[in-house]
Length: 138
Image 1 (tube, rainbow, N blue to C red):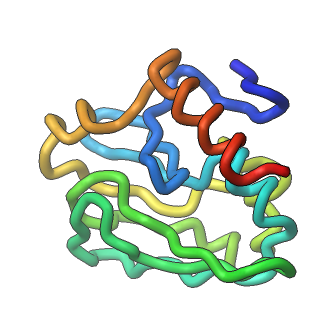
Image 2 (image 1 turned 120 degrees about the vertical axis):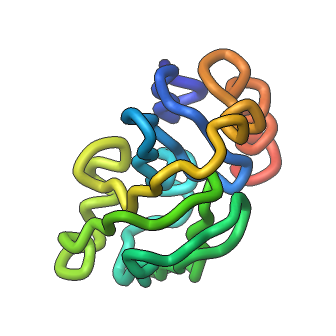
């Protein structure tokens, strides 16, 4: 699905801080959505969370830098970080070229699957993204 030029795959869950989540069994793969990536510009540095860290939904767990600004990486769900994308240490711009694929940031072992109900998915994410575009793109 595309919304005003931004990719919004409808099989993913979205957190209001522009993190996407793909559920694979009891694990969630997490990345930054296309809108936030395009707004931020070329990624030059990513501070990844650490494997084994316990994280809470909505908690800042890392950060990134681009030519335009510094941003935070949030946990969209509560759980334990099981893996981080170490390729991003060498080439953070993978997030720019493939935000929903090779540009994933970390994986979480989901502690409470009920939290997925607090995220947006498919058509439910469209009004939110349109509002974000209106607020942030001039």
